[in-house]
Image (tube, rainbow, N blue to C red; front, top):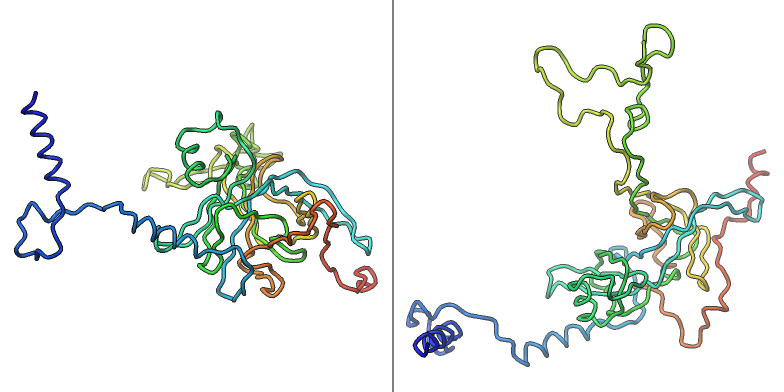
Amino acid sequence: MAAASKGLVSRLSHLLFIRPASLSLSQAPLHQTTHFRSFTPEAEKHDSITSQLIQPKPGVMTRHSKRTGAIAVKCGMTALWDKWGARIPVTILWLDDNIVSQVKTPEKEGFSALQIGCGQKKEKHLRRPEVGHFRAQGVPMKRKLREFPVTEDALLPVGTSISVRHFVPGQYVDVTGITKGKGFQGGMKRWGFKGMPASHGASLSHRSIGSTGQRDAPGKVFKGKKMPGHMGVEQRTVKNVWIYKIDPARNLLWVKGQIPGATGNFVFIKDAVYKKPDISLLPFPTYFAPEDEDPEKLEPLVADIGETDPFMAAD
């Protein structure tokens, strides 16, 4: 037993041996060329200094800058009427307590990104690795996480709040979500096929997709053929969605048109790629509320639709 303990100690000392700096590589024995990362106070101090470089303060946005996105809960659809009486179908989105839960920097991970957390969740309903992640970052338990790639000038410290003021009325955004599940569907509903004749020449095959292959050569159905199958539950992105109204007091967002997903699902919002917003109007890297601002007393903000009556202009 003593011999085994002595051998274990000698092996551990052999593995933890670090070659002195004064010894060159040619002079060092072969078993001394393996190095291990030493967790020293100097290394921890360097990491802390790197994290302190990110300050929560407004900056100047350039055309190459890329801001973070946000996570919202789809609350449903309704309709609003603008000042000219035009009906606008809108989807209501709720930004439920979005905060920065992790920062990824080029020095540590090799790229710049922000992990955003949304909602609340009890510790007993989370897995242990998830609980350890939130405790290591020093943030409350979150229900949904999403990573958004950003530029280095758009990094934010952990714990920074992301509200609806991160967006401005009138800008365009891209909204990503998971579509509704439709179950097993036929070719006409799933792919929009025309179907077979409705009257003559088709017996009990009016909604059939028709032929699916060729003759003896190749003698098979090619992969990727559009056929009946499971429909829905796929990630889809709706581009260039117009923000009509925001309510800072309730953290609500009204966007024009429909977005993927059922009521209660999470969706992910970010600045539009094609219809880029005016960088002079966007808060960068996000909106920082003044200390004396009372969110409950803020009035909703509506997009500017111009001074031309669309009904008179049509005439």
